[in-house]
Image (tube, rainbow, N blue to C red):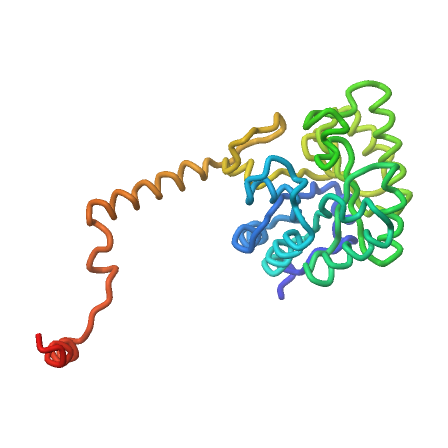
Length: 285
């Protein structure tokens, strides 16, 4: 394997931060998408529980199960020759106890082929992070807008917009770092608050909707491709309208079939003339 395709590790990510190189981070939920992201040079891939919404049509991430997450994580991992793969621990896969958290995190590594796991929550989840890390599994923290706790934090909206809540997020980040998190994801928090966290952190701080000061950026792949239509967060930049391309292709296919334009001769197989004559003869045709 050449240097460009060598699998990235945590020391590689830390080295990128040291030299001021931004980390690119995108979700993927299947082999074909992950393969293209990896070929494009993506540094990290998150197999998010957002797959419950993007792939299965659920209104929230909560219905994602461990078996679902392990299946799609394994598919992504098989495609990621270079990208560092993070498996997203679904709702109630780590909250009940340290033992539950360790067991399920281990499944992401052993069965899913992930390089690390991610879990939501700040100081209240520091004990879980520490337990998983002590078991030898790298953990990414996730604070700010934490979708699994949407009902408790007032919905899917920006967090840390008051002095008190911003201070709590800053403290949460420090707690996660002290617990052993190798990186922390900030979701939908004010850019100035994120800048404070970055300035105090000694681990990579990644952003999804939290401004440019972070060491890297994450977006949802279905958002940037225009494939998720339920809602579009303020922080999303759409890079392509793949849904329009797909819709056009489906409509053209329907028209061709209805009109008899497909399949054409070049899309069909032939039988040698002598075999056809023999067949006709055997059928009495």
